[in-house]
Image (tube, rainbow, N blue to C red; front, side, top):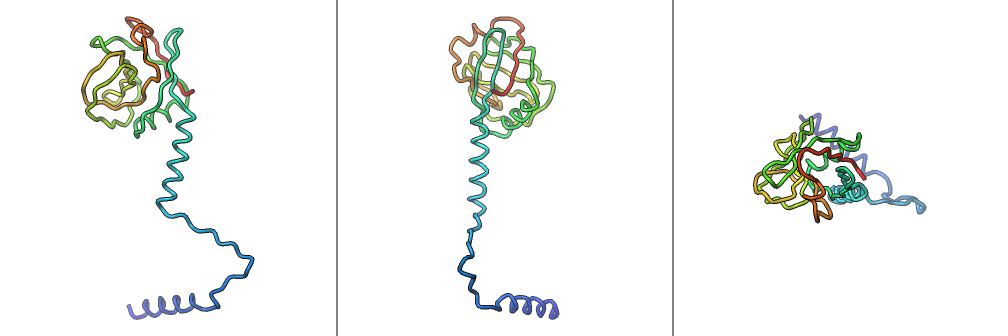
Length: 166
């Protein structure tokens, strides 16, 4: 212990040697704080997310949606960066179209009341497009920007919906 203290004391003493002045042409760049670094990476992530929107194509209709801000939506966006996903979807309950993603995403469920245009992850592996309302524990993935007439545009019965990045 005494030896360790001696080594540390010697190292600290040596680091104090010198004039303490830098040459006049030396440029000092301040190191960003942890908070500044986090804010910068968050800003970069937000810029990237703003550049990518969710595109949903059903028949002749194309809908654009804004991704939610949660880890599940980030994971869905990452999945779509590997290529478009087409899901067979059916009506359920008179307020949504639902289909299997054939993969499981992280759930960040919270009790919400859906609105027309909500794109929701259900049970971790089902994706839904709401054209009505429902209250339950869900994970919001995105929100269709213009849901007017969504129910009619989605049609009745089984549909093919293609999810991709814009």
